[in-house]
Length: 173
Image 1 (cartoon, rainbow, N blue to C red):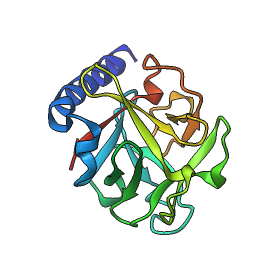
Image 2: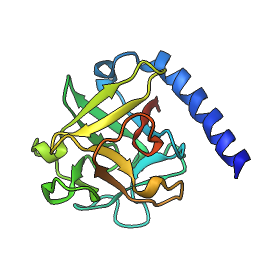
Image 3: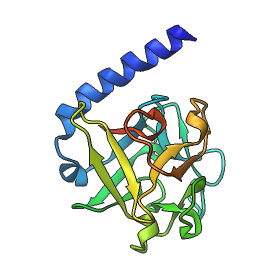
């Protein structure tokens, strides 16, 4: 358990260090595709490949990073972003636009509603961020801080950079 946590911390630190150099400001990320990597688990955000990854309402989960199109996202915007999936062309969306802790994320046709808009709050610690929904300012969060493949990604009240389930980085793919 300690080795796993140490390995995760080292991998996350290496990722964060490299990503801080590769990305600069989040606004510069608007051209190209990126893996969105959770700091706590080291896993990538994806539209669940074992469901229907090209359909409306496909759940957004975390899974071991492998570079597949279901894990590639294009951030579109300047100070507020939508994250468009490379495989489906759909956006990360807060299910039914509900502003409540535990509301899962899904993909939906990009309509520009506030349930699809996100801000990326940088921290001076080597390129890690909190990704905040425009619905109530809640953070993108891995449910229960899980490190399991297929764990639900949801919105939850922001608890700070000390909560690795709510800290993310971007890796160019």
